[in-house]
Amino acid sequence: MRRIDITGQRFGRLLATAIAPSSNANMRWKCICDCGRVVVVAVGRLTSGRKTSCGCEKAEAIARRIADSGHFQPDLAHAEEWRPASSVAPEWLEASSYGRIRSVLSDPRILPPYANKQGHLYVGARVEGVVKQFSVHRTICAAFHGPPPRGRKSMALHNDGDPLNNRPNNLRWGSGADNAGDRDGHGRTMHGVNCHLAKATPTLVREFRDLYAGGRSARSIALEHGFSPSAVLDIVKRRTWRRVA
Ligand SMILES: [Zn+2]
Image (cartoon, rainbow, N blue to C red; front, side, top):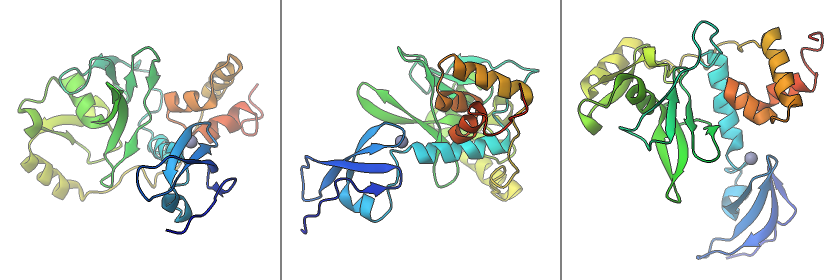
């Protein structure tokens, strides 16, 4: 195959820095992402425009969609409650009443969700060196409604048909037949995607600025509160919400 040198070239957020060892004919390049992560990517995926970030771009897009849908809005009436979901996930994965998943291993953090083609959310977590995918709705359903009654045959169903709404009160265990019924009932609409942006509040703005001044990254604040990292960065850098003291 034709050998090309893409060192120094930029593909979206990825900057190609060096050729990486490859076990087959596909050339792979080590790239550094704008977020700081280093990834190795096949040349074709870069030049075709299929790969434009380490994955952070997709994670941000889905975080934005969730923020837009309002499901992760901090809920002052109900504090976020975390529970283990050991029937469907390792004991160090916890699910929250706001619909989020966190790892409580040595580096505790909220895991950024990503969506499959159907709009269902998943998180990736390393189990014994291998990245495994965990379904967000299944994990949360197990944590708050008990183990799936019929094992793998049980499906975690969304009462309102919105796969982005993974709060426990929107989830229940059901069968494939129930799922088909649901689909007819709500026409498989992707709620939330087209909703207007969830608004920050002056209280949140002050909280974000305090956290940022205290050393937290905009990204981690964003993930915790369901905002996009760029929206948080704009807030903490006072490019938006300038009048809030
Ligand atoms: Zn990245």
